[in-house]
Image (cartoon, rainbow, N blue to C red):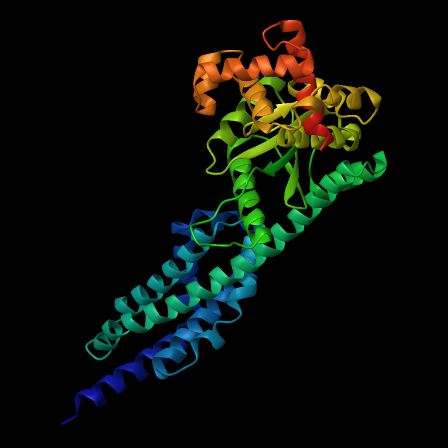
Length: 407
């Protein structure tokens, strides 16, 4: 009388002999099932199915047989050739889901082959193979995924490097032939015009009691901005990182005003405030536009403007008087008499922001409206300019801007 283990060992040896004798037939059935159930494989050349794909199928079947005979076999080592094969499928554009499905379909076909020929001796072994198949497929799945990931990283790395080189060539004003060569290498069609957007984070953030590394914090914020731009703006945008900021080149396919409105909505939806300067330019004029976009962004920040995307027209007056010279010095001198009383300057700034509305100005400052009136009269006495007169107020506003930009 034989024991259960002896019966099991006999069944396993019978399965191994059957698979060895019927290797070509099993592989043919596995491949036929894959072609029938995973249509993407029908797009591969016949010689590839008969060559490389068959070779991988043979490896899978051979490892299956070894795992039946030896439960402790090193599956990862035996299935290592699957990784470069998976990388090739990734390079060819086959979806990873289809490639993984092919492994499962092939394994099921092999089990079906055995089940069709299962007699009273080997049927228990066929039923017992399910656990081994699962372990084998689990390892194969991990290896295929790693192969795909490696190829994807290489491909993305090459693409990102090529696009960064193109963005840098545009930003730095390289020669036209160099720009065209960089565009070809990046597989990017140069548009007629780019929106040149200089982006920076406004202010700092962090939980109570925390002192985050500014470099890590800036990188995280810019990564969030980049993700939002990639998902929210259509077109092949180019991202050129700078110190705690970034330059973004967005192909201008539609109306400039529509893009600016889209950027405003996008920035408003972010958790942290973003200040950006935007200028439109042709590809070969990007380097000149970068300087203007950076100036516009810096002006908006220095003037304390709220988060958003600014054009030159939004800060044209301030842009003009920000140029060093006697005119700016003369405008800044207008507010020199207020230097000894910071409250007067704060009141004037609030009065301008609130469009000369004394009650709203008082609420902004947290004082009584009569206090606002008293301070405005004091400003008139010291500067000889009356904030209530439009002509005088324009000079005071120019003085505020010149003073802010002179510091």
